[in-house]
Image (cartoon, rainbow, N blue to C red; front, side, top):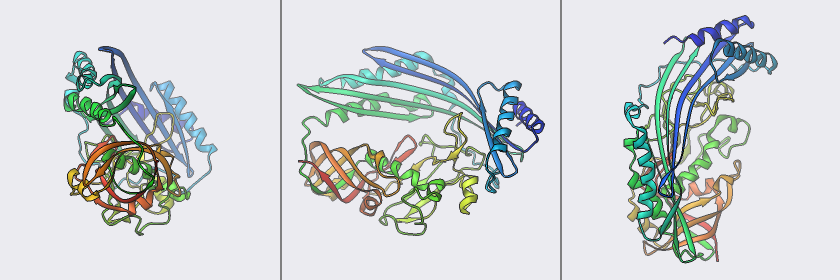
Length: 444
């Protein structure tokens, strides 16, 4: 694959004194549709081109970005990137990645994305609202019913001969439904992700949003105490998301990770496994190569409760002596690439939802944390609001709301007794339900 822009970038960097060059280019087409009050309420279109240029020389790195991509834009980027490199502190860890294997041939693009009409997308979005409201007489409206389509063409080239390209299509649908009965109101969400519109089920997404709202009517405050808890898969995914930064090499090296200096140690119960799996196409973070061209591959981070590894790009991999794990991500056009997870997941277990409730016996099905992202990133301590449903005799009874849960992230992982078979992706975080033997609840 040849790219004239890359040839221009090489030439312009040479004019500025030379160095190793990496050019990342992403062209995206995004469409968003929103429905409200039985009509299409808003449509937004955007077509963007983003370029990121990194220059390495004398153990220094410089970065610049652009949104035009013509010769003048690339000349400016080369000048800025070389200036930044000259102005930065040297570090032997800087440099292009050592690429030792080609990326796997996985397809993130569904050609059907190009054949979906604007009318189909509009009708789909309106159906999210219609189905949610029709679910029950108590369903009154939706706050949000939206569909977002993104089709991207990404390429990466560097002066060591790396030349990569990927096409990607993404469809996210979301509904937030409102139910009312007397003076009480409840909300619920439903969502879906697929590589084409035809991979989304509007009825299932809207029905999920409505059912989540309806199941919370008559919620009460539980008594304070210690409870056996089943974390619904969505709540379990929230827990894994909070843990995500602690796997990143820069956080570990800086002592800002609750997993720092614990490699090879037991950090969770023996039924806990956490992977980063960029090849699972059902997760929205799937990709064949990372933000600097290293082949992505599945990484085992926690296995049987033991911490097995961290995630790193080439810079931080050199710093901590593990090499790149193909975990360089592009957070946005205006910032250099950084270490990040792709698809972080807790794999599925064996216990069905009914058997999970039976194993709890008497306790709580915790359906949602409120503000779990505020957990201390170093200690793992948290105290946040939560919602759930009481479990009595292995059966769901009354909904619970307005209570608090507190504890420590790693302590919770050490108290995981069973893993459910209801694994689900929540964007780029995936999890099944989990049974926690004990959690502190602050209620009545």
